[in-house]
Image (tube, rainbow, N blue to C red):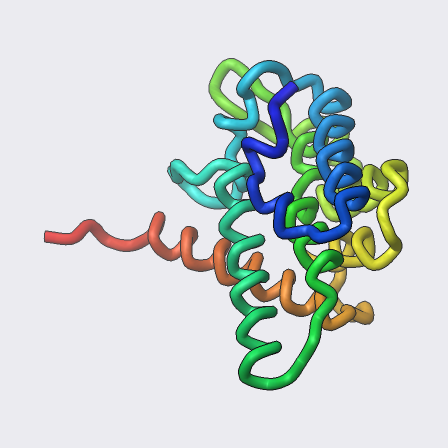
Length: 182
């Protein structure tokens, strides 16, 4: 099992140590349920929807979490808008945890698993967070962060995570599709 505090040093950004421990425990549960082992976390792609990219699930998670923190700090400083940092960071760290159930390794790399065909990662991630006894606000963020949340209420923290995730996704997608530089 990976050392989640080494994989995600952003766990230290969560003031409530009990919540940070629960976030790490959800990653443990997903890793076990998904049948992953050793340092697989360093190879699992963040998406199967973009061509070749070296961005892993762990790197994407860290990127999105950093964007969320920056947005929350900017909103607090410039707009006097206070978001719940612990909820936002916990949700950001777990927003794609369900991909450990959605994907599987095959000889040619990775593909969608049977579980992933039945439930996409926002739903399986929400279930993992509920099982891990995380606050309702955290599993709300996970559940509504992607297309499954379209038309649903999104809390202020869920809005920030949703846009941070798409900033990262769309930027990496555009870079993968960009014509080569001369």
